[in-house]
Picture 1 (spheres, rainbow, N blue to C red):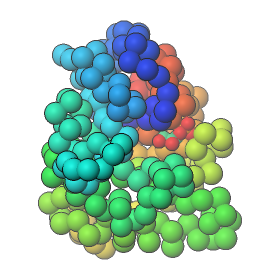
Picture 2: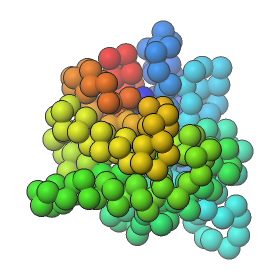
Picture 3: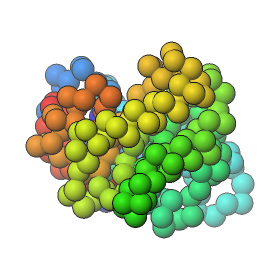
Picture 4: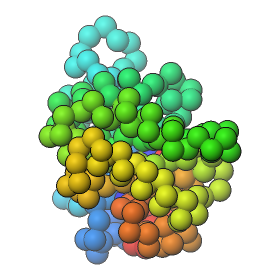
Amino acid sequence: MAGNWKMFKNPAETTAFFEKFLPQVAGATHCEIVLCPPAINIPAAVAATAGSRVEVGAQNLYWKNEGAFTGEISGPMIKAAGAAWVIIGHSERRQFFGETDATVLERTKAALAAGLKPIVCVGEMLAEREAGETEAVLHQQFAGGLAGLSAEEFARVVIAYEPVWAIGTGKTATPEMAADAHRIIRGRVEAAFGGNAAAAVRILYGGSVKPDNVKGLMAQPEIDGALVGGASLEAGSFASIVNF
Ligand code: 13P
């Protein structure tokens, strides 16, 4: 169960969140729990979660280890700061910051090389769904962003299916719609990496996951977890999602 804070909270607010959140998930051993704050808050999050089962992630990385790339941060920097995960190819990065399937692949390889666990996001826009192109879009994103990994690399990747029309809109995909998309993605994994990889890969659903709809989504065997935006910002709400 992963939270993506996007561009919300400062270091003090990060510390305050974990003071409330950790006691509420102390009994949760059924899943891994990951919070991805803005990079500036990673040290505060790592300090606050020390000794707990909760892990910290970044929301993006650049694929070079260091260099004259003003404004960027690298996988080894994220790792050295104590984070274990990184979100890659979020639809907001694709829409607003020029992320492409090719750069998703570069970033994913760099994350793996740095020893980070990537959460690679895919998902169609509303116009694409309405045009009946969901399957084609998912095929294309998988082919460009993930199929170029080695089998050994792919085994360390988590995929997040986030239909863009369901993000921050309050419109969740129905559990059946999400499961259908997850089946399409798992089919691509099978074609590229074989049946064992398809059975093993974890596919998270993201898009308006809330305490009151998480149970229905998680009841689908295809859905292995959630990537939560808005509802991960408040400790009680993300704790009830984790404890669904
Ligand atoms: P919301 O849960 O706010 O819809 O955001 C989903 C998301 O983009 C998580 O990465």
